[in-house]
Image (cartoon, one colour):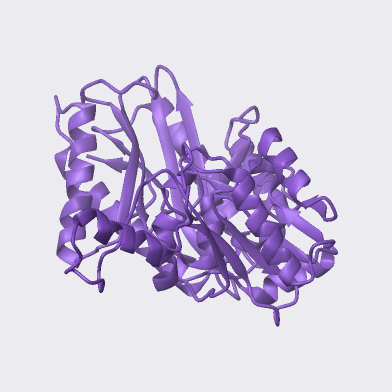
Length: 415
């Protein structure tokens, strides 16, 4: 299922005076088409796939796909106007053909003829981006967009691929639409929200299992394994079939960066974890302490708590993200640490390359909060000699405020 909102896309493109978007990254391709991009995108080179989104919503979208994933695309996407080009993987389909032919080679040749394979056909080393771009040009021309202003995500386009694309579209004006696409993806569809909700619920089931495994002498790796076991058990219990990954940053003890260490009396245990459902990642952070916290542990965490509570109160439609950042920083300063500084106190969530997606809750984020956003809001601190501490929840922004997708308490948990 595609998550693209054509009406929102139209408004954003009209404001930017764009006639169409040309989406070349695998994430944007899947977002716009609802279909997997396929293995040819593994090198992060443009031209393997493409989605064309005209600003006029009455004009159909189009796509360039690879031959290995043509069937998957047709089964997954509502886009019908596609162009197909070959990749390195040899294929064939003998289903429905005459199996009484004299030789196996003749049957395979029959399958290739059915595919429309021309004499002298040869597969490329991986894929040919110039072929993909030529097919893009054909689709644009068919929509009267050969000389149009086309928005492209420049921040994901190599210099080499930009020159190839420009040469293939000599009459078009290519415009950087990186931020426009980010703004488009910023508002989540109901299905995307469902993915993120399931992902955080799985991650929290793992946190509960990790919490129960905390004991003197337990290793960092053992606690991380307990978290993953808890996630897997919840996946099985709920029958989740679209878990696509997980990640963890668990630290134990005074060094917040180490991958080693064992639980000792007074140790802080920082848990920053996420699960991916259909490629959409959650992000949650919790902190545990073995026994009563020390004076410094308590003071640092209480400052984070105060900042979190003040910033959270501003997560409402219409407020600017930079104001959330400023209020959070000021509250931590008032709690006794005016020198505390952090570049951002959270971020969007989605199906991006990493666990953090634009927009960021930063001092320069002149972005108004809107209903439909899903944000991870966090106040972390990492102090060698004390340990790592974090409070992090993910929130769905509603018409009137926010809805917490987490259910576990955010305080410093004594075990």
